[in-house]
Length: 110
Image 1 (cartoon, helix red, strand yellow):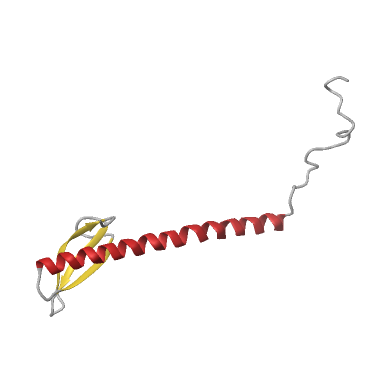
Image 2 (tube, rainbow, N blue to C red; image 1 turned 135 degrees about the horizontal axis):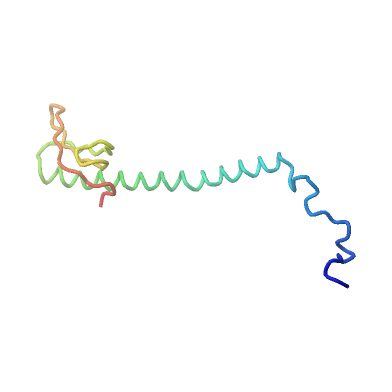
């Protein structure tokens, strides 16, 4: 048997037959399931990360406000265009509603 001859099992076999291996609807369903799976993995972890950063920033701001000012309410928020760039910022809000910047807590407070 030469290398050019096909074995009997493969005679007449055309690899692609000019048709897709899967139905287009099956491919679309697979793509939707994959995208939903990736979203299902990314969104909860992103939410958990942001929530943890918010709790950490609030705790740090509580300590900084309690140590520096009397009778001030600590306010923590994330600002993209703050004085030190994107960061968590700690403010002390007095009785009149004025806010005093205590400091920047960093992009990842800790």
